[in-house]
Length: 541
Ligand code: SF4
Image (cartoon, rainbow, N blue to C red; front, side, top):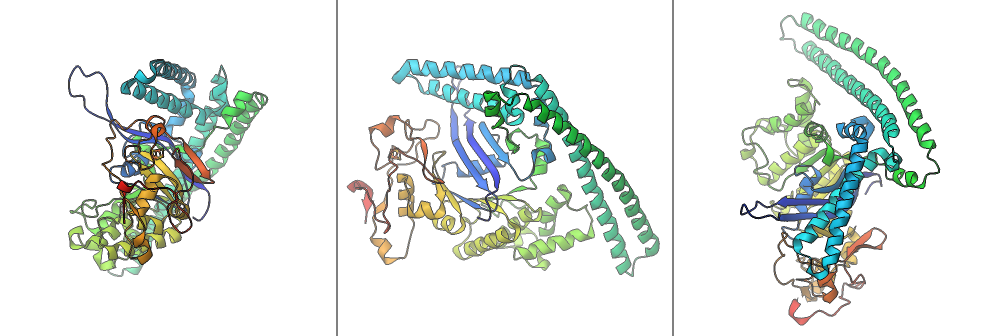
């Protein structure tokens, strides 16, 4: 890990897929609960490995982070750009409708409390659907509360928040103006560079007719764009001064509530991360430049009708790195291809002309070309043979160092995950059951599921072969009606009666090492021997 700056913060993320009702009279809604209460902070420059059996929700989590799926509840905050710089529209909407939104979340909180009371009254007789309604309402109320408080801070605690919302909105609008001006200046810079590149190419190409006139035209255009840019630069200075005045107005108003405890409590919840789940489609498209994905299957994730050059160039023109036809774009694509171990003569070839490893390199080049900050590697080496796997992993490592990339590395191959990850999260049936540094998870696993997964890693070491392998019996239960209590109790070799009823809390056992189990003590010693008795039926020598 290179630094401890937070890049992504996922809080209480839930992803439920509703199941179509089978009859007109079916009242209750069933869901596939793919992700439940996921909370992770991913630091800039780290590789976060995500492991678990197939169907545990790893890939769904990766795709939900990218908002390829809408999340059901919770927040996914991105810190790669500031909220002020990106200026998403949901901020203005929240501030404009603040009193209504606060009333709405209070109503939701009441509903959630009533549902919880109903469940408590029913006690052991509470139905599956009563619990489901209670949990969904609680998550909805919390999400609605967080959506307001993260933007308004202390002002959300006041009975009358209109004045606070007004000054915050004014500041926000000035920020939007500043952000738009800066964006325009960046575009004009691009246009200047484009015209100058055309002029340079014309100078070098002696075969072009009337080159002098064309060069003059390109340079004249560059000059006029430069003048436009100068105008905008002076406008930026005025807007910056207005922004300073707006910031002062906000600070002055906040000072009035300096002694208000509730205000201070809410103010501490203020967050400047960009909530990906609240972005509009167009806004999310803009951020896709920063957040990329490499899919598992390099065969189906490339368009067979496009050449390598077109595949890599598509993102570059969409995200306005280059204008279509810019002579510099080809140069840049070749540079990225070389970085990913592809030769320049491959530029005009089609995906079917490549091997699996080369195709995966094309996918990596496509993701990398737009200079992302965060890449979800979704089982990106699983479809490749072992020698190609190591090439791709080394390439990912190398690029991470060079470009300061951050990865979410999803895989079911624990050896690969151990090699590449700084931290590891272990998922079971949609929940994170253990999370810690790669070293800690491997040397001191505390969750029985992690211990079983680690015991199943194939090895060629003679000593390790003598170690007892833990075989988990049965299949993963249905994510539609997961078991009550601890979801793992139906397959856990340490389960007790409590596990069948009480869900284990997610506890920090040592700094940064979290486990969700009722038995938090050490499970293996320094030599890797188990510190618990294995029931005979679950072991194999
Ligand atoms: S809480 Fe109980 S069932 Fe769940 S993992 Fe721990 S010991 Fe096993």
